[in-house]
Image 1: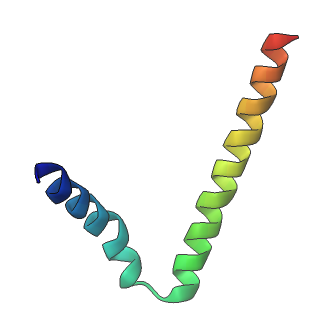
Image 2: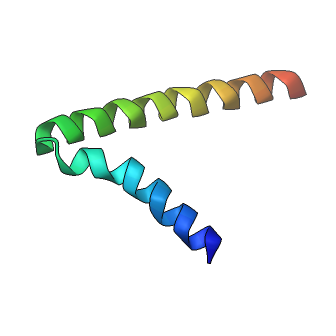
Image 3: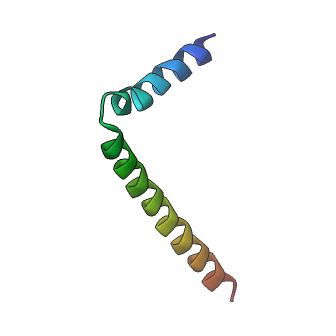
Length: 53
């Protein structure tokens, strides 16, 4: 039960602010985060391939 309360609290903190922003701002922020994660994934993959060789 405590886990569910913590999960809902975290979800409210993470999802609450975007609900009050205009959709274009939320979409732009989401695109920035997605691009950052993509760059991170590519860099990590390249780093791991270099370590194996």
